[in-house]
Image 1: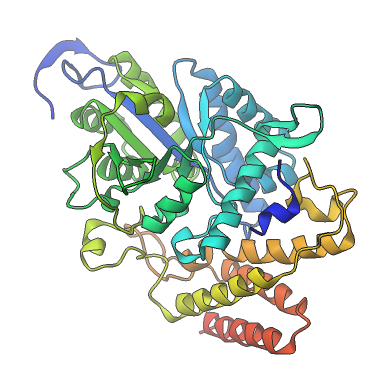
Image 2: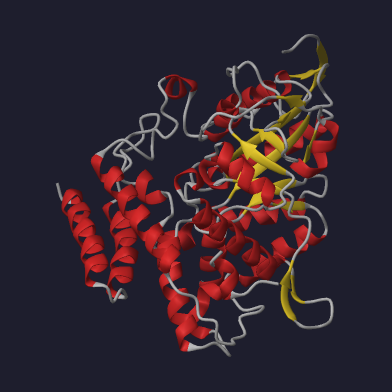
Length: 445
C-alpha cells in the first residue's frame, strides 16, 4: 500500500520457397526469438491537441494491433506522465484494454520513473521517489485498488523489469533498481564494456552482490527499425534474421504511426513475416530464462541516444547536455531537488490510499495541507522530465529539423516559477526566479 507520505522517501542457405515479402525464405535462424520493448511516453508539458493526435496516430491503433495478434506478445513501458494525460483526456477504454492484455500476460509492463527524468542526474532520494510513484500509478491503473482484506489499497504484481528513461543508467541507478526489487533493467548496448555494434549479447550478470540481470537492447537493430522508411519490410526482416537467435529490440512506440505514418502497417507486416518464417515475439520476462547471461564487472554510464562515436569522447548525453541553456536547466533542477528534500510532510491523519495522487485537487478525505504538499511535490517532479533538455539542444537527427521548442521549455520553467511562488523564504524564492528569468531570456535569442 502507498500513501502520500511514501513519496517522500549472418545468413547462409536459402530456400526456394517465397515468403510473404519479395525476398527468399531464409533456411537458418528461423527460430529467432525477439523480445520487443516499446516505450510509450509524452512529457507533462505536451499540448493537448498534439497529445490527442499522437494518440489517434499511434497509441490506439498499436493496442488494437496487439489485441488482434494472438501469437504476439511484447513488453511495454508506460510511465505516469502518459497515463495521467490519457486518463485526463478521456482514454479510459485504452487503459482498460492494456489492463486486460496485462492480466492475460499478452503484455509485460515494466517499472520506470513517473515523469521521465534522467535518473543518472537526480539524487538517489529524488530518483526513488519518481520510481515509487510510478509503481503506485501502475497499480492504480493496471492492478487492484483493494487489499487482501477488502481495504482500499493499490496493488499490482509481476512488475519485474525496469526501463530507465532514455536508457540513462550508471552503476548507482542499477544498484537502486536492484534494491527496489526489480529482476532486470534495460540498458543500451553502449553500456556494456568493450563492445561495439557487432559484439552483441542480450543478457549479463553484473555488479557483484546485486541480484539483477542487465538486459541489453541490440543497438544497430533497434536503431535500424526506428528509422526504417522503406515501402517493403524485406530489408529489415533480413537484418533481423541475420542477427542471431535471441534479440532484444527496444525503441519508442511512437515510431509506429506518429514518427512513421506507415509504421503500424509496417509493424504488422514484420510480425506476420517473422512468425511465418518460424520466428516469434515475446516479452522480456518470457525470453529471459532462455538466454544465457555473461558476467561483467560493471556497466558504463550511457543512454540510448549516444552512439559509440559519442561514447568514445565521453559524451553519454549528446541531446541532453552541452549548451548553456541545458546547463542552467540542470542547475535549476538541482535547486528544486534540494528544496524538495526539505519540504515537510504532514503527519496529520489522512486517507490517500487507492486515490490518484496526481489529481490531488480532487482527492477526498485529504487535508488541504497534504494537497499543498502534493502540489509542490508534483511541480518539482514534473520539472525533472528530460524533454526540457531535448527541446533546448538545438541539434538535428538524420537531417530532421533542429531540436528546439521554446514552448516546451517555457512550460517546464512554469513549474519552477510555481514552486518559487509557494516558498515563504524570500532568499530561496529569489534564487529560483532569477535562474528562471535568465533561462527565459536565453530562449529569446
